[in-house]
Image (cartoon, rainbow, N blue to C red; front, side, top):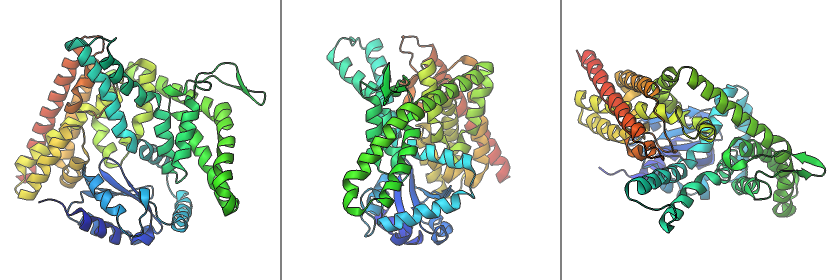
Amino acid sequence: MAKDYQKLANDIVKLAGGTGNIASVSHCMTRLRMNLVDENKFDTDSIKALPGVLSVINNNGEHQVVIGQDVPNLYAEVQKIDGIHEKGFVEDKQAEMQVKSLAKNAKKRNWLNSIMAFLGGTFSPVIPVLVAGGLTGAVLTILTNFFGVSPKSGTYTVIYAINQATFYFLPVFIGFSAATKLKSNGFLGAFLGAILLYSTINGAKNLNFLGIHVPTVSYNSTVFPVILGVLFMSVIYKFLEKHIPNFLKTIFVPLITILITVPVTLVVLGPIGNTLGTLLADGVYALYKAVPPLAVMIIGITTPLMVFFGMNNATYPILFALIAQVGSDPLICTGMAPANVAVGGAALAAMLIATDVNQKSVSMSAGITALCGITEPAVYGVLFPQKYPLIGAMIGGGIGGLLAGILGMTQYVVSTPGFISIPAYINPKGSSYNLIVSIIVMLVALTIGFIATYILGKRQKA
């Protein structure tokens, strides 16, 4: 039966404390995300019990209602509710109360969790762009290697532009998303990203500002500079919003914010972010090179846990640093690919064991979705509620990751790890080795995840 998104939206908003208690609401690929004025008014148990809701997570004060891939339909209905304005924000006064509430509670939270939540919340809205742009690189590989499309043709030029624009202008997307996440001005965040990419700034040599040397940084190949710049920008922006008279805000808040933020980013924050990204990539790659099978196996085992806690998207900075450094991703997506299909296998095994018709339906749809790389419905609707499929999926993902590390599997473009992204494993140089290895690894992970879950489930039933 089709979901009644209008009713579900009204029920969630009501149980969240009403529009007056919602400072902002947004969504990612599978979750409705809400920031609240008073967290105590959020009725977690009642929302979990609503038909169509898979789970509810409180991630550092952000309440995430797990819906599935149809969450945009729900979000559209939420935006129609009186009191919820465009982009999911409510009145400025309520938003200010929410920010104060979050700041008050921030001291009680683990700082590492806060950083990971911020990174995850920043990258999550950008994932559709990354998937679309990344897979066009795989499309190019197929066209040139199997269909004889010339690199000099117009077809190649257009698709290549789609692929390259995705990652060249990534700081613009990240700038907008990070600023929005911080309840600052998203367009100023995007503006900062665009400035960093401008031809006289990006990779510029012998540049100075007021006599101060500006280090040379290629901003199109890293995300940390714009993230640090937006963090600083949000502080300046909110300070000016608070202290500049209303009749002067329209002109002077954005002007002063950018005039302060850009030089500080170019001279201080950009070089720090670039160094941080380089060190991170070097460190992670060194660990991978030391014991590749173990490193990829750990990713394969822990991926369902990262998804459950909403930390999987926080790995994107490492992924981009690796790709910039070595030209592909032999660790993050490579480990997540067998993990995701193992989750699909576990969910399908749980479907065979289940006796309840509704649970069979949930497990089947979640399993198929997981095979395509979207595992949240399976993680929240099958793995964690029943426990034994979680163990089966972790076994399958771990063995698949171990095999991927042994055979040297890698992913050449950014995409959702799973069978739907098979072209991402085609070597642009034309070799079929990595593609064959990737298919074998995922089939092994799927099979082991399925068998392990089925055996554990039968034992539990007995």
